[in-house]
Amino acid sequence: MKAKTIGKFCAASVAAAGAVLISEYFSYRFIFYSPRGGQNDDHRLMVALKSKEERDRSIAMIDALNEKPFERVEITSFDGLQLRGRYYHIDDGAPLAILCHGYRGTPSRDFCGGADICFNAGINVLLIEERAHCTSEGHTITFGVKELLTSLRGHAGR
Image (tube, rainbow, N blue to C red):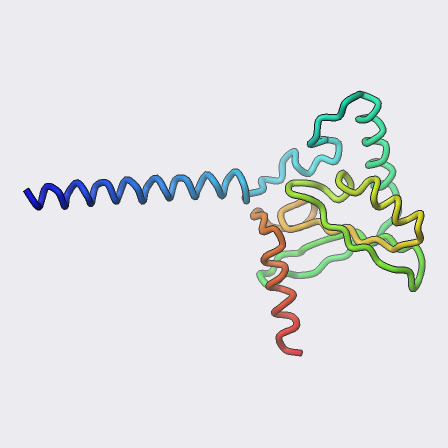
């Protein structure tokens, strides 16, 4: 009788562990994995705009930002990936705004209005293309955790 109870407990434990693994896999695939599909399309607006005019105005602002001259910048992360961004130089010695887009966003889509405000105020702008987004390498969205580790490791020897 005792062996039967232990067997049921073991079977239930294996089933529970399997359910946890399946849950973790799907969480990774739907939350952290970035297949580089439509999420990188600047014209794919994530929020429902109230009118065609709002959509057209947003797309025009996105296109204007993408047409503005910029310098491509990149760093190599501690795990060997090229992380990229766009630097818009307005004036020597001007303040710098470092803008990080949102979850599954793009710099142009998320900052088409904000970057223009910075430009008009004479502020240089760095638009970061986060890991697994746009032209930066990688397939796992890390919400900046791995980039923080790169930064901390870079300062550890100082």
